Image 1 (cartoon, rainbow, N blue to C red):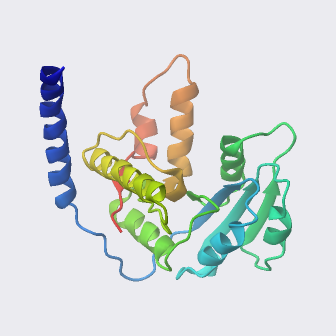
Image 2 (tube, rainbow, N blue to C red; image 1 turned 120 degrees about the vertical axis):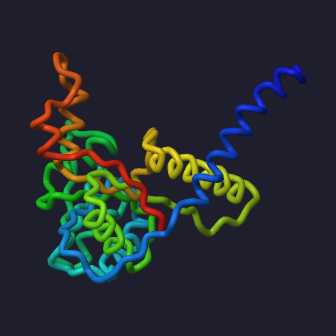
Length: 235
């Protein structure tokens, strides 16, 4: 058993060392000015009366032009006061939509929200998330600089109190590091939907690729119409 552990430890140590070196080479992204990008923020909710007001407030307080954003709150059959709280916030940027009886689940909520979005770029998050004032401006500036169609951004846990909370936060931080290295090295394997931005062009091409039975690769014309570029943003 000891020898098996030692054999497994060698490749694991190499992976950790390689990942650490890759993380150290990353440079934080700095923004300058306000880019002209328009963004549709999609939030899938279900019984989020404790969180949704704070989430919407932090988005509405963004250092980002009001005319360049919309917020679509997609309600997956909440049975609490989520709807009344959202509808009680008087701001024309907020749109509240409830899923029909035939639509169930977070994926359905996001899919419907994307279908209703009027802007090219979709930014998804969760109701229990809070953001600094430069969140949307940073994502937009990054996209314009690197012409990315898919941006994976980090998510940090907060208000850890118990030992279990701190352990979960550390475990979550490890996943963020793995994501950062994978995206930077073009070994994309996962991202967190609580801080994710992509273009409708990318989404439509990916959906076509997944659902197509006869064709599994993009043609040259399709690739030219939407250059696929995975990117990582370091805040």
